[in-house]
Image 1 (cartoon, rainbow, N blue to C red):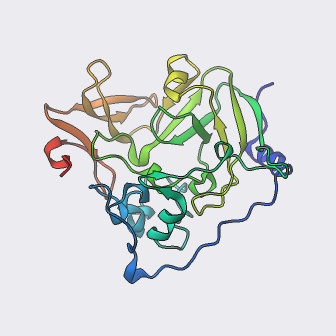
Image 2 (cartoon, rainbow, N blue to C red):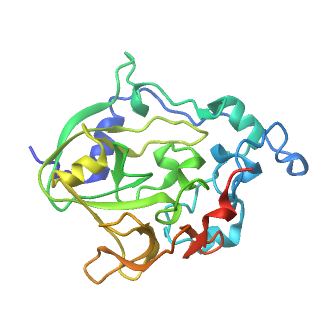
Length: 275
């Protein structure tokens, strides 16, 4: 059976079988000691120098107001009113996040996940924050806070060439694709209650096997790689909503995104070497 139900209908259906969901309680944050309790674990453009806290631009109202993601980040508050140190204490262990049980699905009263198998029909639009090595997607345009993702999903690594702005990728279903679909539990100080789709394979494999194709907004620019040589490049979305190479970076260069406007440019790797 095809997943032709509107996303809202699916959400209501799943909510009916879930236990009550409440947003995590948060403590207030002292702006004078905003980074207290945070160890600087990574160089680069991260909040308080920690990659688990996401890009520093999330704290800049002007950057957020002009971001290329439209309304997806409008109501997202990375630490839900608390300080980064308290956020890390609750949601991380060492240099890694602590994730919710049951793949992040909300739970029923009996502890079972609020999930069912659905077959997504051709033409269905999906998106995700992260590389194509993951399996989790959501209906296109789902607000970030409803995904219960950590702020790190919005940032890139200084060790590698960058990708699309804020790691945001859009896909269209090309042929029937069966997924686990369900309600997202609250986590990372976010309310959740969005819908997530979990694939049985990585996104890259779904693309290779013809289930998905990555699409984009014509005129949008980003970082990527030249298809045949895998060389870092700036890329642009063409009139067919497909990425194509604009400029191939030179030897010893990566493509990096500007912190303020996320515009791509080729820059020397030496600038990003770890101390």
